[in-house]
Length: 468
Picture 1 (cartoon, one colour):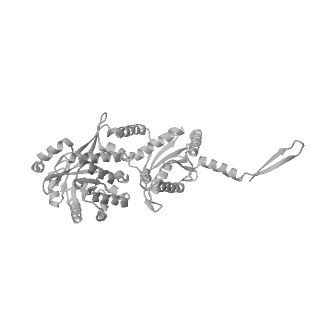
Picture 2: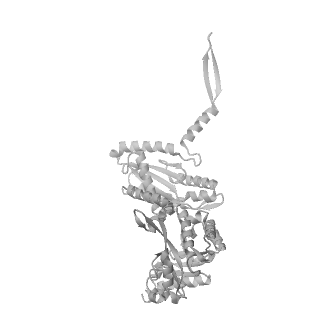
Picture 3: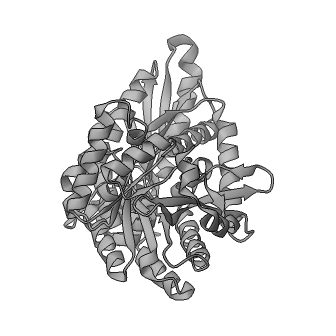
């Protein structure tokens, strides 16, 4: 590519120069491309997306009355992407973002725009939307497609996506307000358990405000000493004595009062706060247990997020050294969801915990009954049978057979069994007959504050429970 210039001379005539500007034009084109394209994924970047969003808003406002058409904004956030970066490194994280971008390109039609806004956030504009059916169909395809495993540099990674959907002009006509609406819907999708989508509706503003207030307060709860542990006893069915306690977290908020775990644990998991909260719970429980009889163990629930953090084993090791609690008196409870997420890494952590001498039990067993088939491969010490099976004891052969099978299988693998949600003396007697090791539930005792534990142990009488 040549640039031609003519320069007049004083005595007449002119000088014509020819300059090769190929590289300059290529550089200018590259600058223009970089200004509108995300370097890592090749998708439009936030700047270009904002421009297209403003164009769509103008068209929607001018044509909605005549054509009854608007457009949809889908706001996407990858679930727990930070864990990938933290555990596998940024090169793997970048590779995952590129793979996600490729799947987005395959799903999004030519008349729509998919962009990377930054980090693990993406957005999609769908033009000419007549009803919610169109964006909903796209959202369903996105959730399904992005959930398929990725092979990134030899690492198999499974990740979900949460999606917030806002419609123009129904939800907003101003581009910034529409983005805010989609962001609130995204927040609701995360609160609903992630790997799903939510449409914006007016009440979300208040829900998001309350949730964010709870999140802010929760970040300060440990320092302000608002958290406490209550303890529910575990009954040894052979000796009829208290064999230990499960620690259950409570939050005594200065304004909201006693906040139920269901109202703050999901927020703690979504934000990663469960890692410091979980460490606090293990440390506090171990300190409390040092005041109990040496025969009493302490069980603490551990989230899958704590497993993904990569620091769980070191945290437990440090806490045991700090508190002086023998490792054999600490039991960590995990869910089947934890086992199913990145099982190879999880099994490695379980083995390390076992090597420390810490016991590990599978909580709420039965909510994913298929796991019976591979229990033999998991380094566990015990199984806690979910209350949904216990409540059916004595009401027909079904519940009895299932629990009996679980107990028998556990015995062949030298695992203990604990029945959760025991509420009647009949259930307790049947569990004893079936050979269950431990029982837990309101029949024995509801969760109690730490200062009442020794009184319960010293005043324990099995006869009173059986007479209930």
